[in-house]
Length: 376
Image (cartoon, helix red, strand yellow):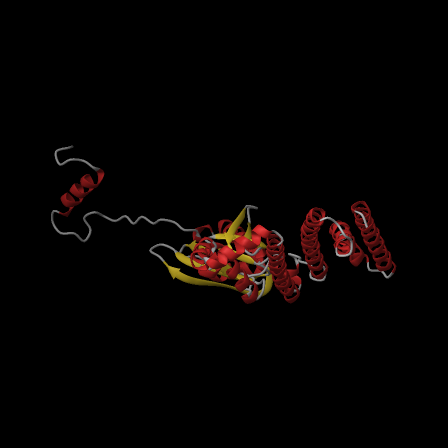
């Protein structure tokens, strides 16, 4: 068989492989749609791109083992085919992992409102999303590493460099280890978070005073959406080394409070009744816990704390603001004397003082007002 005939056979294999993959995917999509599986049909359709390259070149790789070519043509075509096959199969494997993730997570939809309606279902969905996302990242990283290794091994120079690295493993290991330390730290921390689950996607957290929700978890960083729509991008290793608050670790409900300063004459019982009325009319109150207590006293005021339970953190913040507004408005309208005030006590300067006290008081008043002794 001449070189021209061998190349013609190789081209025929490429075309035949393209036709085979196109017919196979089309038949699979039609069969899935007829069996009422549109989601699986869409998943198969996503594999068209890499399959159009991987299947024809797989046919070509098989043909290269049978046809005869000159060493130059055979070496060049073999290397090109192997390179394309590695890249296309890496693309296909990555697309399969992404499609499997989307198909699996379709059964566990994330819903912010589900925290208050079904906390168990919302918590399960968050755990599944976090674990599956991290597993997908790990699988894609493994695909990239394996594909890169296979490409290097396809080059003769790559094998030489590999042998050189093995020969100088001591120095190369130290250099690579020091260079990759931050990356490996984040990768190991990401694996630890995926197993231990200190937080999940959509959890409410407080980090360095910033309130927000976990929006994205990758192998090396975590994105937190703050309440004002800014994003905090934090390395994964930070969560392993530093403490943080997770408000939805075991459930979305929490306790909120409003701290007020009132006069000593404030009607505590009436304030307690008014707080109960405010909570009963509020849609943010969960209906479980409420109380109003005097928690402290100062020189001129009492410290009163209104405690109430909320369905979630957003409702707790809204409920706290509502209690502040309406409870203070209640005091202003019905008991204005209960608001904090500063008292001044006046008495006769000479009462209860010995002889010469009036002169001492005058001199003290002049000193406090900034008048010098010689001033009139």
